[in-house]
Length: 374
Ligand code: NAD
Image 1 (cartoon, rainbow, N blue to C red):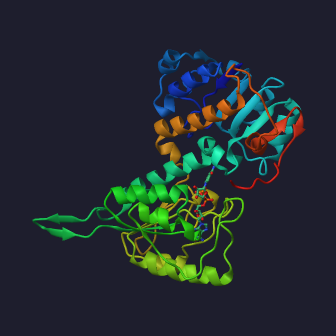
Image 2 (tube, protein in one colour):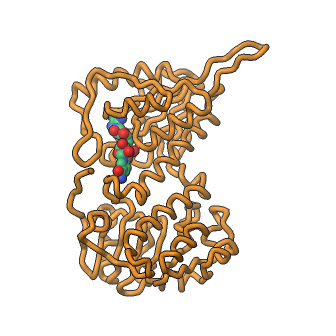
Image 3 (cartoon, helix red, strand yellow):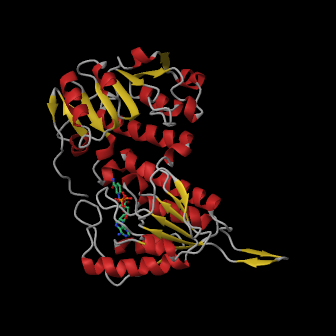
């Protein structure tokens, strides 16, 4: 079978779904790979590098004629309509928000696989695009904070006197939060962190940060997500966030509950923060954890607090993010190509495959049944 790698349609999408390294891995699985001209240009990957890896270069019209098409963003309806019946699309899809896409995929008779719905089970970690993107966002969020912060992250002891390390408070210690606290610590900051899942305290402390204790904490639910807080838990948590943000130089908030962003930083808390301090809202693309976040923007409040709501953090490091994204796809295709013969097997009995299948053989299979974490 042939795998097609289109140039991403959106001009501001810098990622690409395959890199030369992942092209080599796809070929080892028995596939041939066709890359659209200039597909990797925005990630600093040349056409020649794809050719050297064994891919062929094709025009846009041909790339969509592949047996399997892999993309970063969901294609538009015209692109779906240009695909062959029986072909497979692997992409980040939003079936609940895009019913037209689901209908088009069904009518076109394609298998649409959604990388946004990989079940949160151990076996699926290697193909979990959300984790890869969160990891990069956490790291890059700290780089953005360091650039915007009015001071230095590491404490300095010099002949001209000393300055203290930046105090960084991280809210939510999932994949993004742990990456952020690791990056902040490596720059020399004094890092504190909190998560409603109290069992992450050990992980936070093992990375050299301080786990901030709150009297009332929630637990992880059976599907691996944080549970909603009760009113009492929420009040206790918000009191701690108010005190921590007032003392912090940088606050990084990553809190999500099943993809929805709770408010963790109110306008009042921002008003009590120090001038020159920074908030990085890593939940901005889900609406934001800070009441004042403007998704996609960096703003400065009247009291001199910078609020970073960028939603394109993974795309700001397109070379390595494309590598991670492409590897997630290789790992999915390893699972779905058991014979390594370049033939895709859609085994709906496999909980991972079932969890990501939106349409197959002209049927809509969305939403998938719930999966318990292992
Ligand atoms: P997430 O993006 O869903 O949420 C981010 C973090 O915010 C979570 O740690 C959550 O507990 C926390 N949170 C929610 N509300 C909060 C609040 N009000 N205040 C403070 N924190 C709040 O989480 P994630 O990064 O995807 O990962 C969560 C856990 O799931 C991690 O332990 C991760 O390793 C695990 N995970 C496992 C897999 C897998 O096994 N395949 C995949 C992804 C994540």
